[in-house]
Amino acid sequence: MKAYSIALIPGDGIGKDVTGAAWRVLQLAAKRGSFALDGTSFPWSCAYYLDTGAMMPPDGIETLRKFDAILLGAVGWPAQVPDSVSLHGLLLPIRKTFTQYANIRPHRPLPGVEGPLRPKSFDILCIRENTEGEYSGAGGRVHSGTANEVAIETSIFTRAGVERILRFGFEQARARRKKLASVTKSNAQKHSMVFWDEVTRDVAKDYPDVEVSPYHIDAMAARMILAPESFDVVVASNLFGDILTDIGAAIQGGLGYAASANINPDRSAPSMFEPVHGSAPDIAHLGIANPIASIWSGAMMLEHLGEAQAAAEVMSAIESVTARGIGTEAGKDRTETITQAVLAELN
Ligand code: NAD
Ligand code: IPM
Ligand code: MN
Image (tube, rainbow, N blue to C red; front, side, top):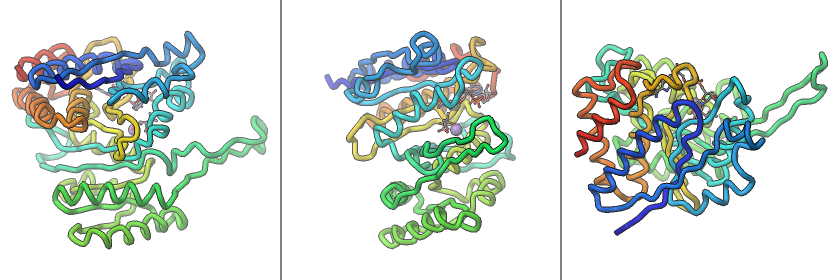
């Protein structure tokens, strides 16, 4: 029997609940599909940091490298550990070291879920650059604590980095509705974003069958709400993609529905699957986190592993559950109720 090794990092807050839910659904999907998912769970989190002084052990990255994929919940417990410490100690190094440069986030409303928009159908695939740009971590502070203090955070855009994410986006567009929106802010950021536009035009020459539209991030943010049906594939830098995908989540009905995959397209290291949302300290311990975003991310993991049929079954189970009115509103149904409903539907 085919077996895949999966590293589980539930993390903090609702990350633990939703990963547990997704894992149960994935186990059932594997059983039905006659393959095995062998999970190894790691307690790396803010609690782990408070115990040990680090978010993961020094050989954490090398430990993860051996796995076929990583399923992550959420990282962050700002009341006790600064986000800049927890995220740069766990989530961000995994994305960068494993060259998971394509962060794929699908945004489409599930049946029965009423988002904030008037009934609207849309199907957007956001592709966010995930290893450089505004989140490179390059910079520093000098004259700390004085009136002359300076903080510098430099964005890094490399030709290799920009070209590969755009190529990835064009390939996705080619396999979908052949439309690609490239998001920049080249009217104000005259170096990096003008460069991004130029690379877009260069790469577009190899994809004459794909219709390309450039957007400025501000206009794009409005259009995601006013005319989301006009988009197919959207490619954006790390920061812009981060913000747009929370808008994507919002128009889907909330963060509880937004899935994400951090993909290493060359497969030279494992890819990581996680919901877009964070640890939600405001609802942690209440048992009401929506596990759908995490389960959907798990379906993306199955797809990446080559188990397309199992992935499709999980997606249709989610869709049947929401179509029946379960898990369609934040806080309406408990995590356990939604999970049980997905499991029953899958069976
Ligand atoms: P958040 O996504 O955790 O929460 C934002 C809002 O959405 C909250 O009101 C929350 O209750 C709600 N929400 C989120 N997921 C939900 C779900 N599945 N079901 C129902 N409601 C849900 O964002 P935040 O509050 O800005 O961040 C909290 C912590 O999580 C911070 O430490 C932040 O840095 C971290 N964070 C981590 C990740 C990650 O690990 N990938 C992503 C985003 C934020
Ligand atoms: C996300 C999150 C992270 C990001 C944070 C927690 C660093 O917001 O996955 O969207 O910005 O990538
Ligand atoms: Mn985000």
